[in-house]
Length: 307
Image 1 (spheres, rainbow, N blue to C red):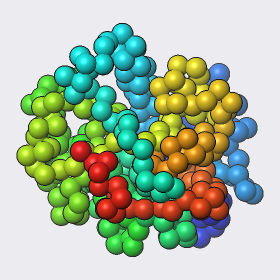
Image 2 (image 1 turned 180 degrees about the horizontal axis):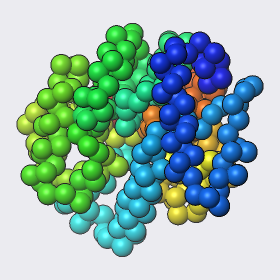
Image 3 (image 1 turned 90 degrees about the horizontal axis):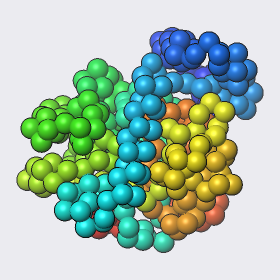
Image 4 (image 1 turned 45 degrees about the vertical axis):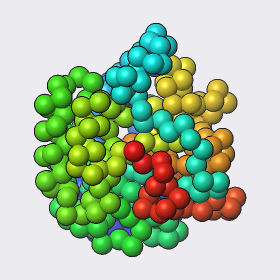
């Protein structure tokens, strides 16, 4: 499904939200890049809009900062020290079930984006897990209801406000987990949690274990945040999420080749980044054609990868 096809059948109120999102994108574009942004944001044909939320640019800056910090820390700190501090545990080292893929989407729910992703999943009859931010769950109960009622989805906890757990106290971490859990408990039936930015702590690991919540990492990092409106990733960004040099200007090929490299696995994507919307249909179509099977995180095959 192309995003332009989705637009044709969009409800009036949803189209209004889309217009706000697109307008916000231009509002956050610097004058020196405004003309370039306009010329690379088509609205018709097989191409898609750079649909973003007002906080997309801010979040991209944050995640780049945190990922570069993570890269530097891993390069300068021995593995045993990192392990004792329970840091950076989201990259799953174990090989996934052969030719099996579990899609995950972080940072929603979002007007327009959530509905579009659901439409693509429904088209292909493919399952996925939505790791939702508590304050967004509270703000968009209608979208949560749509996801909950889908035949192909799970809803999971992604903290209350998406802070970097390495920059807040254990007490604040606990509030983030528990507050979000109060609004998501009724539909987070499989008790799944993913750390914002993948940044874990020993204290929160223990708290989540006491709550019977399973921590979910990933095998494949789509790096959707790093592919800017020109579709390119710089060298440091590429190192943080395994983008090969030949794919630094090709988001679609990066995701496909990463799935190939792992022969399946849990795939990390984000609702708020345009590359996910633009390429999701093609990613699913190509992997299905290659014989990959899409599974839910609730499937027994993926349970051993949940901590």
